[in-house]
Image 1 (spheres, rainbow, N blue to C red):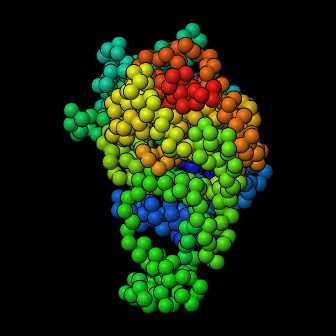
Image 2 (cartoon, helix red, strand yellow; image 1 turned 180 degrees about the horizontal axis):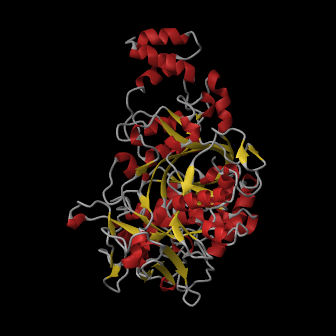
Image 3 (tube, rainbow, N blue to C red; image 1 turned 135 degrees about the vertical axis):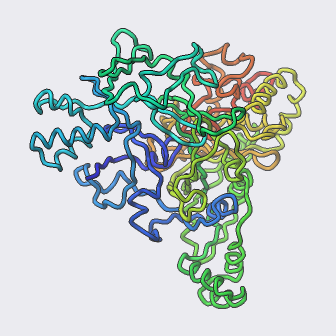
Length: 636
């Protein structure tokens, strides 16, 4: 008998959820298994068309040689929040994902016994059978939340003590995640005081346990609250060791690796951000993407396999209402696409929004309802440097989880091109990049699109580019980015591009914070999508999707010149008044992750990580509001 838990779909694919992530639930911490193990996928050899998400533009982007060359479709993640009977079991037992307890080590807070969950289950089953309990009750009572069979037996079946999971786990740069070998901890040798040394400060004996028939205890001190207050002890032989020095533990990922290039498993708290970095690929659905219907596409594929030439296939399908160009495009795109960088992919979205091509073929008329937007008149905003303000009444965002990393995040372009060394991605299924399916989520929402006049930005850069104050600030971030292994090399080698990126990214953040302060939209319910390159793009999109907090329609109600101007002015004034100033504004060597920010902290410009595309990096409000350098200095 399995136990079922309701959860939100965005915890299955999102910035903090997905295959390989640990989710905290009332029943304990669980790790989501690879999607090939989900009952949802195992129950269907061919995923039905009704469960597929159509976004051929995104599909073609991922279908290249080093990406996912055999990818056929995106499959909508089953909605776990719906279809439950009495909130205990789903109506469709196959329409679920799967997860297991992790960490697997549990301790009893009363008797302090310490075992892995499989041993707790075996003991619970044997003990309750001795009390004459039915197997269904035995399973349901344990999986509701694991319980201590020692205490149950000691108090003659009258005491149910719920177990607690340990907080510490091991992660490795190749994406693996394991439990700490607790059965060996009570006889470790601690070499040095330096708990964070690269080579490790703890020796573990993997040849011998402390004794035969171990009886471990997880003892927490009421006197000490740090790691020295937690002891692992064997009650049989008496060997014991505190957890002080735990974070100095280093276990080689590969036993035969070269000593000069060793990679290590490192201890972390299970809720740490470094446990899980999903590689999320997202896309705005563009209604001009004309597609062949799925059943017709399958038929064309069969004709191609039989060796029929292009003219024959065109003649057959012209009678079904398709244009000749659509059919030829589909046939020619059957060849493996080439890699398309994220910046070029977004350029298509950017160009469509500012210069929409509203030509729809008859069979695709319904698709135009996936993107409904309206340009606003912006006479006063144009004077201060903006080119467009667009109300996005309806947008469709497709979000795909392609892989994930641990310990350090990875740029999505680096992942798709296969350019990685220190940290390696872990794919979401056993088929790796040979999979024909990828799990995805289709979100509908609304937003605001805003872009700058490139001429105004270039004039601003011309004015400040030689300023000593500007050069000092921008080069700190540039140098820190070049020394950071997580940043794609040469991404910000052009100082003008870096300054432009920081300007637009920081504006995005202070607007999100202002929508929270002035309009009441929680920052966690808003997302940013940045459109920035050297020449063509200078824009941003703020959006929210259905199911997030905040009323639908609230965001676009601010997408008119009068309302948005008030939001902008208030955001800029608030950016001048940081409660951490003057320390925040006058940082000397950068702050935040890797020193990639200047004047930006949680009091002024940082937002929840789930809302930011750049891990809260490349921010400096001085480029907006400084009296000498700021783009908006004349406004203020």
